[in-house]
Length: 214
View 1 (tube, rainbow, N blue to C red):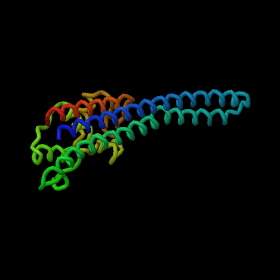
View 2 (view 1 turned 30 degrees about the horizontal axis):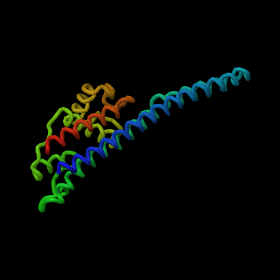
View 3 (view 1 turned 180 degrees about the vertical axis):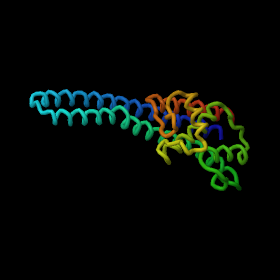
View 4 (view 1 turned 90 degrees about the horizontal axis):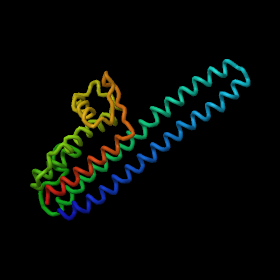
């Protein structure tokens, strides 16, 4: 089991590096797009000034404002949230793969036979079925709360206003400081550093798990 986790952690680190790379590519592309919107506006504004058409100028201002809002808010959030969903899925698959590998070595209860889902079911398997020590670290606590955030982003587009788990997500935001929650809990905004910090947490926990099961 320990040798399998060592190999699996190496693959996890590789996936985390890929996630950081795609996050960097996305951020660079977003900056280029934002700059491109400004350049386009300046070109169109000169044309509008030459025509001296007030109606066209007003429409151009509205169009520019809309495009700047998309470039500065909507597009980054779509990128960052999509990358996070993929990254969290990789972490979940990592834990499940360890459980499934262990199940091959024993007869009886398998992962699918346990109640619960996701990373919590994996923890239940490793502690109750495999009899492994599980690291109850601050990283694990954060990853559990990241799971609550992931669910809110996927199922309610980040609206936490009626989510009973909202306090845990709010506390996570205060700890990691890479995402903000609206005062009325209706929206979540991720920063460009969010995914890098998330995968760093995943890698640290992976090493903690490897050491715990040795």
